[in-house]
Image 1 (tube, rainbow, N blue to C red):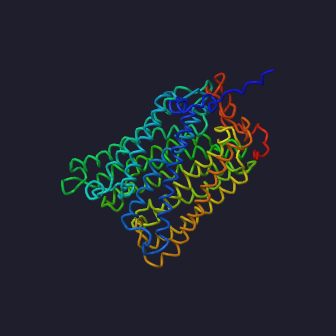
Image 2 (cartoon, helix red, strand yellow):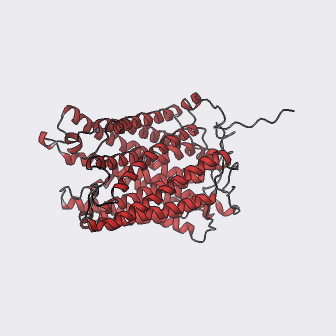
Image 3 (tube, rainbow, N blue to C red):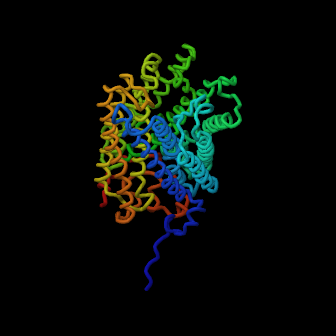
Length: 540
């Protein structure tokens, strides 16, 4: 008698390399992105390690000034454009958006694959620039230094970012059309998971904002090649125009990185609290409010450029306003935790760490939105610390929390939950030891981007470097136990966390077509009150 045939899923449907490189399955494309951006994360982290080692001593004993300039520039470019921006949308969004709305794929599967190839081509240009000498302008590419003075590989890097921008635009467009047109019967807008709301708002920013940065870096490249005089004041150009264009995109880009992580945190907190999210509609609408307000606050990056006091006051008030929808989310997450049946699996530990770090990052953002305080700490390590509390404490912890939550669904394997919780705590401790001293350094006056500093700043810099070492251990641990789980991990059930949502009604990993039949949604999201509390999902 023949053994029963194992049902095919998206991982086992075909094992050939060609089947992966030409796939139009959104789940396989998500895995391709996962591998690509993990490689970029390791590269960006290596640059960060070089920066922190250099800052162990006040005199800059390890690298020359030129090399240090390239290190922090390439760290910023790799992390912002090739990891933080695509991380959650390209990996978790690609995998989950169609399944969570009951669709078989995204609206444009071939364009989805094209977006990954565009990302790889753009990253290749940036890597070429780094291998052949690097770039030293800072990830902000401020002119006229980038367009006229620097002799490093600015043009190749700009081309890489320009190309990668189209990947972001296509992904956002695909999500918008999919969410509008392909929701399962019964899945009304206000029954959608908050993860979908977050990706919808993010996609709007991607489609509307990304063309601006693409055009801006293209203009820098054209000015370098053809000496057009767009930003060069000696040729009648205006360098401040570059800052307006750059920050018009780059401040909303912060929300491309943060909004998806907010969607992840909403899923984690409601699941591991066994409660419906408090104020669902407010959390959903606040995503759109953040996306809208993000477009009109770019001027708070330019308080010291000489813009008028009245202009500065308007941007200051608007910057305070953008804190309101962010505070709504934080308040509603906290209210959801209140009197919930909490359990502390690894994804929940990441979510709680996120709450602490994002709150500190948000509150210190108010310091920078205040005109007088901003002038005092402008371009100091205070800004570096604030930025990393938002980007690392928010975006990366959201990404890691989401990856731990949906890893069993993506791979069909469980990971060791105890080690995963330990890794989350190590990340939390390492992160605070790295970046909290930088608030003090900035307040004391240590400027960013300098690799020489006065002796009295050394103790805090040593603490920061020690914290970076601990943080590195926390980042590396998940890579080891995730790979371990692929080989030795226990097979994951369809719903290891007892969570609600259509993605948990499919097997782990899901079949190629996601659903045997199109599901019909009959209830609101997060109806946890009627579900039993599951036993701990640790399966190793």
